Length: 448
Image 1 (cartoon, rainbow, N blue to C red):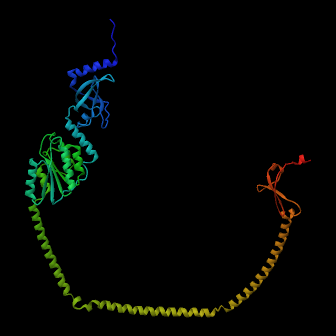
Image 2: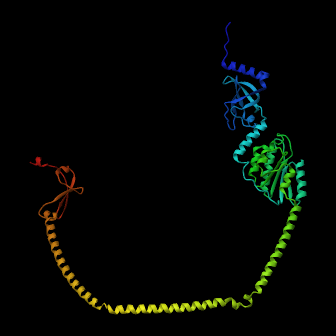
Image 3: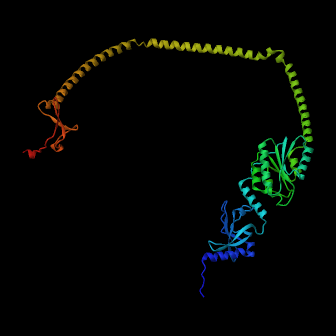
């Protein structure tokens, strides 16, 4: 019997059909350790799952990976749900992961811990906290319109500070759409820009119920808000990321309202007390100023103002007398010094010295004139001799006896070796230049 051979493609398709038709491989629950994981942003994820005895390739499509609430890491133990099939091109089987969560720790708690670590490194928890205004006029409340939170806040604010205006921004505080709704209302409050304080809260619940307040986009919206935010989410033991990023955390909605507004009656009592103290202080200051005015009014300075200048008048007279005496003393000293100098000038008259200087100047002038005449005569003789010698050496004088010189391109020709037939040359005479062309060059030996 002749055997029928299958192609590799046919065999692979047959095996893939076996994998896809097996009901046990359609929904597989696996536990293992992540291996060969490298995060590919905005793409499908390829990795392996292994234990001590085996390893299987895994793929998680982008749509499923984006739903994870934690970040898979190399070596992390996880629980996965998916289907097992065969990859035809490579001939290897692999699991297509549809859901994944950490093994031993709930996915939400794992995601919460990772997000806290990430935001903590970015400084969102340690950033500068904004101060709550002491006397707010308008307060925005971001919460559900049907819960007990808004009723507690309204009751507390009316009781403590009824002049403040509360504005409710109805918000989803639970479910998949809650985080987007919270962010949207925070941004609405910021865009209006007319609120002094923002209260954000909801009642207690499980971690799943409170999860919208642990979302990263909610935390960043709170951090970027310019309006001070009071966070009151869950019970006192429930601490969400929103509580950590907010400017102030309140244990309950009632406590949030108490932090947001003062007690009006107490503030009025403080105002009355300060008004009374101000009036008493004003009366006391007025009495002190009045007593001082009376003392100054009865002072001798105002009754007998001349007495104020008596001492200064006497002092001025004494200073004037001392000044006159000093001026007289200096004048007599300068007068004596001037008389002495005049006498010395008379004893040392410069007329004789002037006459001697005039005679010496006349003698020197005559001597200089004679020497200049002799010097000019000597220089004229030297010049005449130099002119005669220069005339004897002049090439023009030599050329006058019949000599000439030849140039080519303004260069003097010193030898026939520098010339070639048909070249243009210039012959220079004493009375002009002749342009000519070389017909033939005859060295001395050929000429003989």
